[in-house]
Length: 342
Image (cartoon, rainbow, N blue to C red; front, side, top):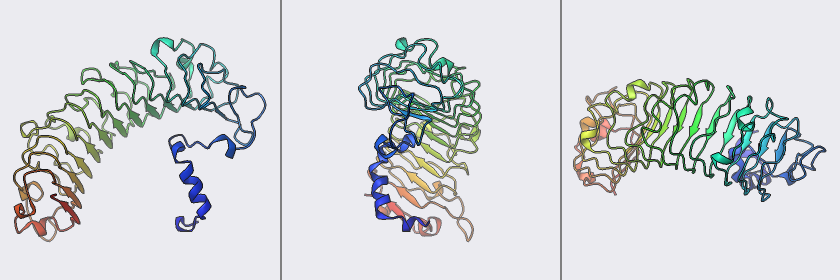
């Protein structure tokens, strides 16, 4: 069915469920009555017997999970501890574990719990009180989210055997560059890494060449190492906004790589426009200290087949205006539909 022909009721239902999209989750009332054998504090819908919904129940502890459960939702509770034995029935079956928005600390996670989950694919552990990551032994882990915790270390070697891991989100923690040195060398298929809102002074080292998305906004980064992006031939989206980047910390041509589609350097202290590749499509430089418009940053040569693919360029909150653009700009930036100066 064409997306334009979706009935209005379906659209409204989708909007109502948007808060559950991260978990491909539907509220219990839409899934029918609970089946037998389910923990009394939770619901296990008959028409989705492999899922157990224990969210929003004011639970203090993780209940015992019955055999057959693959998807466990425990978000939005008051859970402080995970006691040994609660996962004994599903150590080789549990695929998704959602623990967001609780009060869990590392000291209250007993042995014989998460460390026994050998089939886990997704672990969501955001908005808790962890000071170091909790990693299951599963070799099929694909997605790890530990946002909004108190992580202050991420020992190297924890992800050594996680070759199927494609997404890691560690935003809003207390990690420094030293804390994550060597942490991401294991996952050879990693595509997305978010370390924004931490205490990094440089972009993470040792990330795999498979990376396509790197977000490092809101840190203390003041430079980018020469050749850093050359080691990431698949990188398409790079965000380093709200940092301390200065011209002296940007080596010549460091961003001139053909893989990049989007580059966000906004809210830094740059005084000039860094050189970019002609294939870049989105460039965000607002709220810097840029005082000149150098067309060579976008086009070394201009001709019938030599021009920038840039579509969106933001230069607002800088010291340049539209009058700063040289006459040849229209040929170089012929695809730009949105250039913002104010």
